[in-house]
Length: 344
Ligand code: AMP
Ligand code: MG
Image (cartoon, rainbow, N blue to C red; front, side, top):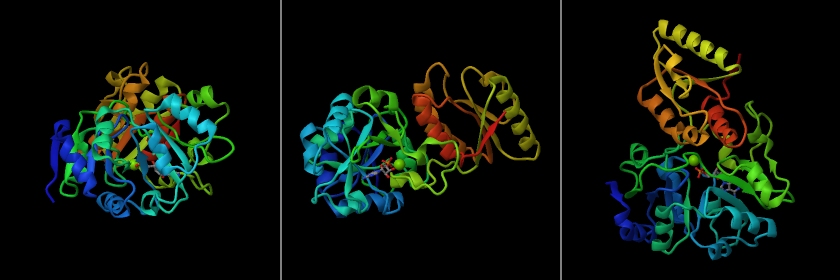
């Protein structure tokens, strides 16, 4: 299959492709999505095939209007309605009980459905133009870092899908917050740009799924978002995170990187704008400024992809405070590192 990389001017054709039950990759404010008609199993199945995604890992249904929630959700609890009104359109996915008509091929056989209204004009245009609600996971090959540019999508999907809509680099850079609204208390299944504190300011107490809250590889606890159990976001080499006193972190990273370099390995260091000038081994990249966590989120996946492209064997990175957006950033970095964290 020939993959067309096109601008948003091709939106009419993109809508036709969705209606023809084929795939279109499209920009959202979080990461690029790989979209198909959510109400059609055959279309949804093509997403799993293109990504090499395990079939029990459900998709998020993207909508453009509040009324479309009722197409897929059996009921919308009062608290869910409140957070939807507060944070939609935006980087928040809400889990609700599903209607019969939503195919198992979209929900991975679950009785619940994940719904999000993206704010990106490109995503909204595709949903409106197609006249469908659109099932979309991130548009990467399973196990690779999520795509934050159309070029990343092309790297993974060339020859596998008919079209990629290029809307430029995304704004946020990490996937949506997922909150389960089917229980007594709202439960965060995946941390993201919408933080626990932001949700609590609207609905009161919110819990975090124990499988995603820690710094340890969660053992014996099964993640409620099926996708969270897979080794995600993994660069090919070994990434090690270092936390602790900032001075000692820099020293430790320099020391470890130098050792591996002397042994003949290809080594990379991920620092921040504040520290990057102090590293002197391997290939050094700043992930952003500590004063601006948004910049760190926005650069995270492209840096991990660059580590792969450079065929690095060992990477060492500073770590981030697990507060606010830092929580979502560390969740992704810990997974990328296989929970390899050193405290100095
Ligand atoms: P992605 O769009 O690639 O970030 O993947 C979608 C994420 O949403 C995965 O982690 C899924 O496990 C999660 N998800 C989708 N539907 C549900 C659901 N009904 N219940 C819990 N998690 C879900
Ligand atoms: Mg994904």
